[in-house]
Length: 65
View 1 (tube, rainbow, N blue to C red):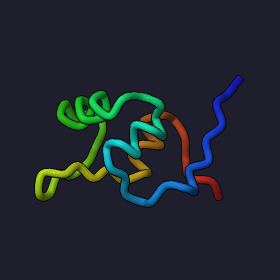
View 2 (view 1 turned 120 degrees about the horizontal axis):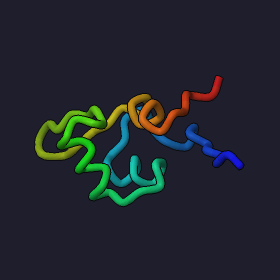
View 3 (view 1 turned 45 degrees about the vertical axis):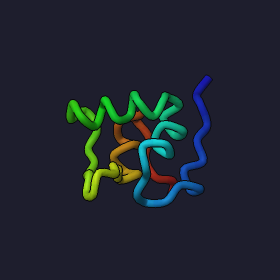
View 4 (view 1 turned 180 degrees about the vertical axis):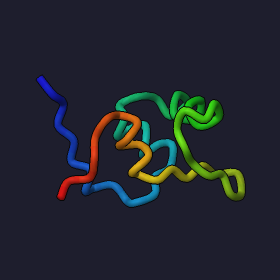
C-alpha cells in the first residue's frame, strides 16, 4: 500500500523540520543528508533551506498537478 502525501500544505522552500515531517524521518537525519550532499539545500546565515522539489525527488514523488 502506497503512502499518501498532500504536499500542497508545504511551502516551496522547507526547513529541516518541515522536510523531516514530509519525509517521515528525524530532522537530524535531514541535516545529515544535507551535509553529505544526498539532499540539496542552501544554508545562508546558518539555517538550512531545502526546495520542496528536491525533497519530493528524494522520496520519489512529484508535485500534484
